[in-house]
Length: 115
Image (cartoon, rainbow, N blue to C red; front, top):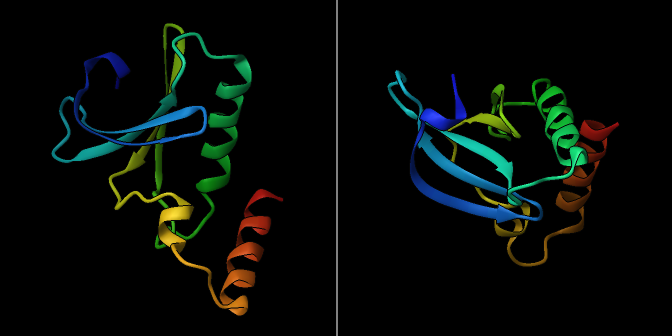
């Protein structure tokens, strides 16, 4: 699997220092999501963040997140390959202010995932 041999289907979102694209992987029968640093010459800390995200998200409920498939490295970039999912940022998913119990359940889940 190589980052350079993918065909972008659509740009999904720009989250902080990262871009998420829906792409067709060569030889795969369905699109996946690729999360890559937005800057052409990213700092090493961004690659480390993708490494941590790959490790942490593999243990989370796939009903709640885009399941990580692989971490690809090529030349001067790293891409986190995720299952094609209805990608929404947390802001988009939450929308308007929520009931406190729901907020706390989400917050606790995030804290557990990052601990």
